[in-house]
Amino acid sequence: MLKQIKDFMTGEMDSKSPKKPKKEKGGDETVQLELQQLKVELEESKDKYLRLFAEFDNYKKRTVKERFELMKTAAQETIVSLLPVLDDFDRAKKSADDPNSPEVFSEGVSLVYHKLYTTLQHKGLVEMESTNQDFDAERHEAITDIPAPSEDLKGKVIDTIEKGYLLHDKIIRYAKVVVGK
Image (cartoon, rainbow, N blue to C red; front, top):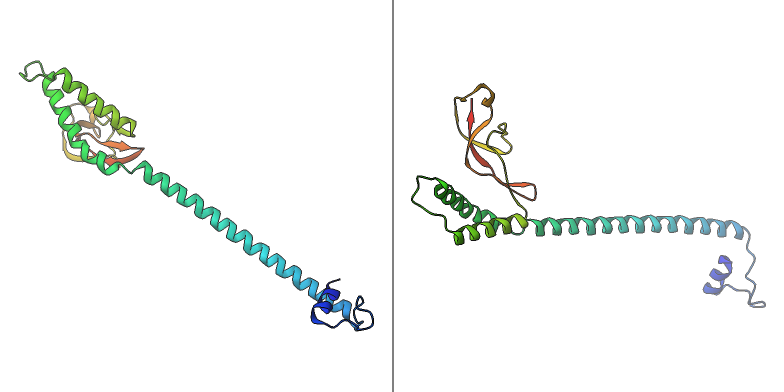
């Protein structure tokens, strides 16, 4: 059939019977070779198509993942710049909670503090707990070390100078701590 189509396209049809192509010696062998070559080309095309499709699919997945990561940490810079404000609130609250302090932490300021803190928590901010934990150089920044008040506090965080924070399980500020030795 392929031979007939080829003969028709090239104009090599027998003039007496336009429907029957010329008989050539070895014609079946040529058709078989052409058929084999077309099968090989088809397999190569399929392979190229599948590889291109897989590459494009990987590209789509990678860009979606990158976009998701970017959206997840888009506010990181803003949140990091708000951390000193949280620290100031914490110091003011601690000072006001001291019974010997003349300072008062008013209800309105307390509401603003809690609203800011809960808003940042909803955005993925988590405070790291450090005091009385084992010192971990991956999470803590040792400011100084002091003799441990008891044997069980050796190698542990005695005091937290500045709180550490995580944003979506990624450390955005290391806790500054005092370690017992």
